Each structure stands twice: as C-alpha cells, then as structure tokens.
Image (cartoon, rainbow, N blue to C red; front, side, top):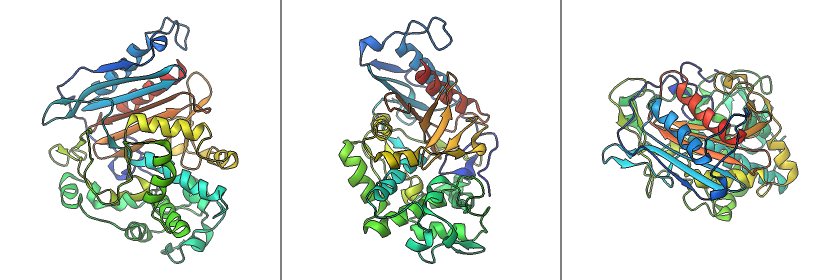
Amino acid sequence: MKTKLTSRIVATTLVTALAGIGLTLPAAGAAGATDATDATDATDATDATGQAAKPAHDRLQAGVDAILKTGTVGVVAQSTGPRGSRYATAGVADKATGAAARSGDRFRMASASKTFVATVVLQLVGEGRLSLDDTVEHWLPGAVSGNGNDSSGITVRQLLQHTSGLFNYTADFPALTSVDAYQAGRYTTWTPEQLVGIAMRHAPDFEPGAKWSYSNTNYILAGMIIEKVTGQSWEQQVTKRVIRPLGLRDTSAPTTDSRIHGRHLHGYSDFEKTGPTIDTTAFNPSAGGAAGAMIGTTADLTRFYQALLGGKLLRPAQLAEMRTTVRAAEMDPVWPGARYGLGLMEIPLTCGGVYYSHGGDLPGYTTRDGVSPDGRRAVALNSTGDGASDLSTEKAQNDLIDGELCA
C-alpha cells in the first residue's frame, strides 16, 4: 500500500493514515519574535531573483508568520549559516495558558528520528559489524513472514531506503485515526514485534527493490537490527553515539514516557474533524519507536544535521551511501523531484542545486528541516496544530526553507 496522498501530504510522516488533517484557526498569542545572533547576517542586498531583499531576520519572521496564517497554532524556526543563527517564532506554545511559542521549545520530531537511526546503522556498517547487503532474515530470523512476506529477500539497505515493499504499519493503526481512538490508545505501550506484526497481517506492496514507497515498518526493523547487533536498544545507541557526543541537551529518544519534559510546544489536532480539537501532547512514543519517537528542538536538529552532512558522524563511504538516492515520486505533490537515500531526503532548490532533509509528522506536530550538501547552512522548524486542509501549510513551510537556503 502506498503512502496516502490526499489534501495534506504525509509522505515523510509517522502517521501516514492521517492525510487530509483539517483546518484550525490560528491561536491568539504573541505575534512572533526573532533573535539575530550575528549582526553581519542581518541584511541581504538582493534575493535569489536579484530583487532587493528583506533583512535576514525579517525574511525569517515573514516565513514563520506565513506558516501561522495557514491555520497552525505555534511555529518555531531557526536558520543557521556561516555568520550565525537566527530564530523566529509565532503563535502560542500552549492554548490553555496562552504562553507564547519560544525558540528553545521542545517538540515531537516524529519521522525526523529516522535520520538518527540510519546514522547509527551506518556507523555500525563502517565498523564492520554489519553490511547494508545483509538480509533482514540474517539478523531477525522469522520476524518478517506470512502473507507473502519474506525477509530473506530484503536487505538492510532496502529498509533504510524504503524499497523493501513492506506494508506500512501506521496505515492500519486505529489509535491514530480519530479523536476517540487516540484518546483510548494514546498511553498504550507497544513492542517493536507487535508493530511489525501489524504489517505482517498484510501482503507486501511490491517485490523488494522493485520501487520506492514510504513504510514506517522499515525503521522499526532497523531499530530491532541495531539491538541485535549491539545488545542495546536503538534508543540507547542513538543516545550514546549521537545525542551525547554532539551535546544535544534538549534531544531525547524516549521509550514509553508519554510526557515531553521541560518547556515545550503542545500539539493539537481534530483528526480530520472526527471530534473536537484536543491536546495531543501526551503520547506513548513506543507507538512510533525507531520510526518516529524522538523529541528535540530546532537548535539540536540543526546541530545534528550540520554535523552529519559535515562529515562528523559518518565515515566518507557511509555518508556517500546515505546520500545515494532513488526517485521518490510519492512525495512530488509537496516536494517535486524528491529523491530518498538512506534516512535522508534530497530536495531540489528553486535557485539550483539540492538540500537534504527529513521531515516528520505526528498528530498536532509537523517538523521540517533542510541542510546544504556541505552542512554549512541549515534550517529547522516545527509547527503545531493541523494546519490547512489543502497544501498551503506545506507550501509555506517549504517556501521558508527554500528561501533561507537560497538567500
């Protein structure tokens, strides 16, 4: 089954069953705030078209305000380049208190977690502890079987690349389909084996390697392989190999804790108008596991992606593998010309060239990011609420990233 593509694209999401999330009104609150940490980055003479450009901080704030106007509740964004970082916010972090969204607020990054998981797998490849050409059956005997599923023909590379053909378990995950179902299931603890078991109720979508289609099942299995190889959970390995070495103090890979600790953005959704808009913040992350359980901030995401593309986390051979992409036509409605590597998207820029990225969506949260191929420039943002019922929220988010990277 393909990732659903209706009025709201969730090709990069944990919750592919939630396409078409409905419109919510912008919350009342702070109009927005921007910090320019480097005065030399405050103005630009011209933009990518040669026209007189807005000062850099005004441009970022305008992009954030445009996202808020599409129906989101709160927005936080960071743009980083050789001359420093700038931040912009709009809307509120908590509708109940009216507290304004702040640049350091934590959020559920959802499927942006996949790049962290792929990084750990590729580190293990670089250490000679497994191969991208190893089969899933080699590491997880019997985990993928039944209804035509056969792990002996699926490689680790195909898991990370979304070319395995395995059914996407979140497309048959009732807890994410309505307000009532979410309320009933939001605190349920899931094991990786149970999540894979959901996918095994379905025949594969295609033969391994035959095409590309996004499936969260792939990364649940990748997390299981990390544990089989190392003897530690994917959460422990991501923390040990990525979070701590980079000093990502506001990033975590939780197991079953449903809370977001510290100051954070609250998520809100009405699940395609299946009930009243609810606060979705509390959620047992085991439902997403290695496919989308992590929590972070725009600053930490920026540091991670810059370190990754800057060659600080992977050996050259493994970074080259990560950046070797295949066409991902499912994502064209939002990202025309998109390609997918190993836990990393490749998106064309309007000014020429490409940027790398991995977005993520959960009920009430949308994460978007982009980093230049050399890692020197990066943009990260999160918006809360359902956003627009058409593609205007996605367009505004993409316009912000493209505008910052092309400036």
